[in-house]
Length: 331
Ligand code: XMP
Image 1 (tube, protein in one colour):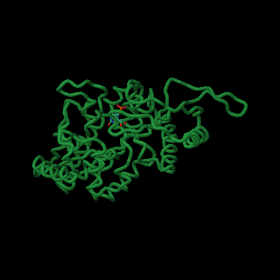
Image 2 (cartoon, protein in one colour):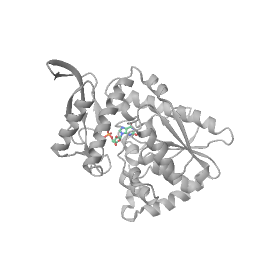
Image 3 (cartoon, protein in one colour):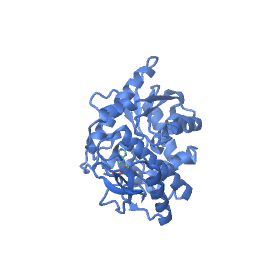
Image 4 (cartoon, protein in one colour):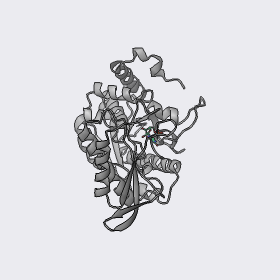
């Protein structure tokens, strides 16, 4: 599959890309209205910022809490993103709906499909509410080039995983899709975000998958297991930020293992508890990745904090596999 942006890689600049996209969006959208699916990540934030520059008040952003977000993320989007961009934001807490739909599901691809399907349905519902005055014509998504490649394509590229923002659309989709950053790699999306004036904290946020912690809880996704993972993940993010390695570590998934339990010791008693995996990686575009050689002191601090502060977690392991052969996420 050929990436139109990398064909002209030497000529690529964020400012030229912005000009070209603003013109294209204006032409495509006309006087229509656009809903932008915000995930909290840089891809959808840059997508929304581009759209806002192109069509301003014709854009409404919708942010859905699917119950699979990390600690503090809802507040970050509702606070920081709105303050930085001034977009109109509709917020929906749909965590019960998503967790009900995921109950009992252990297959990762199935989880992705369910999250994708519910997302679209929630957006359709949100659109109906918003469209009471003027109809919504387009759904904007922050799909980027690696998502397109890994979801396979009509030209025969192999399917690796069905990313929810490409593969899980239901047949009864009622919007036209608009995906202005679908030809970009992550580093290009970041350049565009900076050129659009988004704050560093947003531009340098680590990529986070659409299905969120749903694919980092291995096996069945329950509220209790999500809460436990959230606690461990927050510790990792705090320690990483304190270590100043945020920009060199591309992503740092924390995974709560499913069927595997771990024997431990607490005081005089044996425990039989949970294991989390630390998956820090370095990468340029998520297509390939190296496991990050973090300082042992940092790993030790994270491990001690997690086993001390997170009830039932009695073992922390470090994933030292590159991509390929392993993917970044475990599911
Ligand atoms: P993998 O695990 O395939 O991940 O090496 C590559 C990049 O994609 C992210 N990822 C996803 N993003 N929906 C998304 O929006 C998904 O289903 C999904 N699965 C993986 C992953 O976090 C990494 O950045």
